[in-house]
Amino acid sequence: MKTLLIISGKGGTGKTTISSAFIKANEIRAFADCDVEAPNLYLVTYPSLKTTTKEYCGGYKATIDTAKCIKCGECKDNCRFSAITNFIVDEYKCEGCGLCEALCRVNAIKLNKDVSGFITIREEGERFVYGSLKCGRGNSGKLVSTVKKELGKLTTIIDTVVIDGPPGLGCPVISAFAGVDLALIVSEEGKSGFSDMCRMIETCKLNQVECCVLLNKVSDNKSPFITEVKEYCDKMKVPYVGQLLYNSAIVKANNEANSIINFDEEMKKSMIEVFDKVKNILYRRSL
Image (cartoon, rainbow, N blue to C red; front, side, top):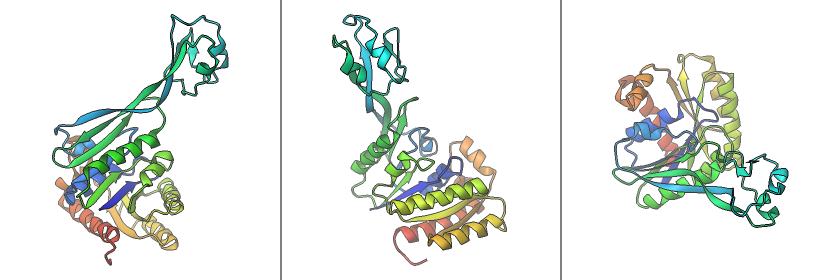
């Protein structure tokens, strides 16, 4: 089994659009959305099919038993997160450190597992798993790992797995790296896009993850950014798999919860050319 991770280094490059197109063009039977803070791959991958949802506990939150509390103020005075007001714990401020529980002389405070988000699993048709982190919760990297483990339980006989990765290059991305065979970096025109692509390549190399680069939303095929990206990829010994022109039909496709490859034949042709190169790298075939 081979696992392809699609990442970007920043939000808004078209990573999920590319992921959904790759999944549909290649009839991928197992995939996951690891952008757990804002998952949206499910919108364009058969959202009507039946799913099951599990609670995800990623940390702890303190609660105060008002019947036992003597209102000494020890917990409030020592909470560095200012999470206790009128002897009630604010769940959005509490970091679950446990100091208040340790200080409470009458054992009125307890740390309890916190439901930090949810994991949605679809076993009907294609295997699909995604995570949703609740507002104000941390441990998104741990949720990414849990999503991948859940997908792994469903994919023992499937040859290719695609993961729509988190944006940026922080903890969630590092978690997404684990066990993947190739990372496809989706970049875009502009100084910001180029800078984030460079950092993403360096992060991949630091974590010993093989990667390749796709330049998305290009204004035209003579854009100077194409040459700049190619030269940097050559310097870093990273395969450049091509560029995709900006296409307004993507907006219509997204609004109709569909993939761009079903809307524009020219775009479909360009995407399949890129995807073939990615698959050749993934399966170690000569380009």
